[in-house]
Image (cartoon, rainbow, N blue to C red):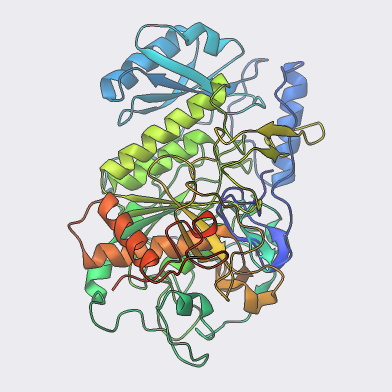
Length: 556
């Protein structure tokens, strides 16, 4: 099962506690390492053994096996990239994949990419075929078969046949680890580091002590004052924020939470948990059977929780949130899930897309590996498509306390193995975290409530964009970021996952103030505002190695 990555996947870390889901999520207040390591890629030694391993994995994460079992076969998932990054390219790639014996599960016509399932040797058969640019496996551990068919799941088209407010009731999921691997439990979190059952919840904070909003200039410094993000010269009106849609690509969002009921837009929400857009009602909600499923709700609360004197207030209260669940039934964020979610968010008009996780199964993807190079290219196409549609793509830097511009050690990849001890590999700066180190992505580091770099945050001159509140997992609930948790609850997490969510909320405010601006101009505004008040010097906001352009401030 994937775990939150307190080493900089972009997610939160609970106040010293279990780790959050992989990527750039929070760190729970006790910090734990990102998910458990998985064995290096190896050939299946027999379909029965593979099937038993997958069944065991499914039982561990508490979910049913979501695959169609083939007749004595095992499958890997592959991304096939067409030479043409368009619908014609995708159609050609799909035809070549089928001709080579692959089962095409999803086409991504927007970017000329196809998701196919096949047995061993598929990539070698398809590489070099006419119209195909590259082929790579997106997982290393085989499954019994392709995903089961979806009945009435829909496609990437905006809209849908659901009425706003059309929801299925539910009590949410139990508290647990943050979902994106960039969070640390207990004190905060940024990675997939612990189980949801290990995340301690806190009482309703009543919008008190919003230190994270104070650092942004978004709330009064008095501990007993209620944040008011929509006041002062140049502040956007509430109806302007309501016109802005942001997407939270994560483990799912509990839209029944009191702080989020008015924020989550069901027409713009979906699940991409197996690489296909599933727009059925409630598909975007957390899966209680998968660990780290509360992470996305925590992130969404930081972005846009209602300002009503109860619970917490988000950076952009009143914004509309597209909840896009990426976390799959086996606890992974595979590249096809990210591609699907990125395209869904872009086609539904998101102005900001939050990514507080890293792509499984490789923490860092190296260009000299044919599979990893394809994953980088596929996610890169999706990011460029989203940016071209006007979305600012925001990602957490990760919770590994590593310099992204230097050689480093990866002790978790591939993390989808079902047996074997953790492996260690040394990678160079050319090996990147997805999607945080892709061109054009706003990559966010974490600071504590004193504005200093958090001990767990990744960093790197030229590799990070902005710094934002992520909290300290050793500082208890007061040092972490308190936000929403499934089932109407609240949790204190710390991590770059939390930091990224603050930037996403700030993009929403900027988009409300400047509705005609494109993604590059909105990102440049945040960078310019952050740099304006930052003096030069080590460990202050002018230190570009840790802060990028500077420390985030709310646009006015």
